[in-house]
Image (cartoon, rainbow, N blue to C red; front, side):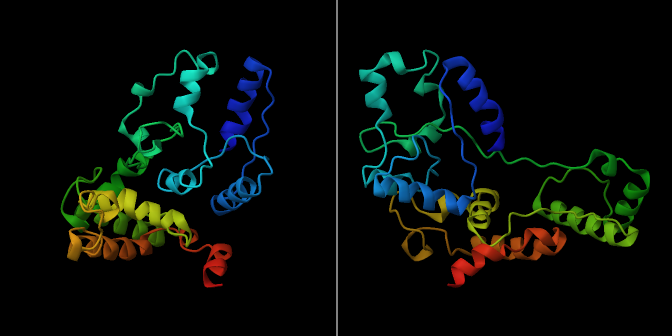
Length: 246
C-alpha cells in the first residue's frame, strides 16, 4: 500500500540505513511483474507480495526463500522480537510440507460492519424506517435486517436527491469479487474454505464439498440482488474485463 511506501519504508531506512524502493501497482500487474522477474532471473525485486492461495504455485517452482532455514542459520538477521508462535494459524498457509515458513503475514481482512451514526440517529430517518419495516433502526443482526437497511437508505437517497447508498460491494470484474464472495459472503452463509472439503479436497456437493450447494447458490443470488443498492462505480472494471474477454 501507499502507507507502507510513504511511512514504513521511510522509518525502516532511518533505522537501518538501507534504502527501500517500493513499487505500488495494480493487483493483476503485481503478479505479472513478479513472475516475469523471477522466471527470467533479472533480480529486480527482493521482496514481493504473494496471496496465501497462490504461494504454493511459487513453492513448487522453488521461487521463495526458506525463512525458517535463514532464521536458524543466521539468527543475527532475525528481529529479536519475532516469534512465529505469536501468529495465528493463518501463518500455516505460508509453510511447506515440512512446516518451514516461506512468507510472513502482514495483513488480515477483518469483517466488520460500518455505518453512519449520524444517519442512524436522525429522527426523521428513524421514524420513516420504523413506519416502513416495523422495527427501530439499529445495526443489523442478520442478513434480512441488513437487506432492509440497504433498501431503505438507497431509496432515501433517491427520494432526497442525495448520493446515498445502503450497501457497498467489491464487485468489479477482476479477482476482488471472487475474494469478497469466498472470504466474506460465503462464510457468513456457512460456506467455509471456498466450499472445499478439506478431508477429501473436493469442492462439489457430489464429492462432499459445498461449492455448488443450495446455500452457496442462495448466497450468490443474494449478492447479485444486493448490487442494486450499491454505488454503480463498484460494478465494472473495463481494463481487466478486456483481458478476460481476450
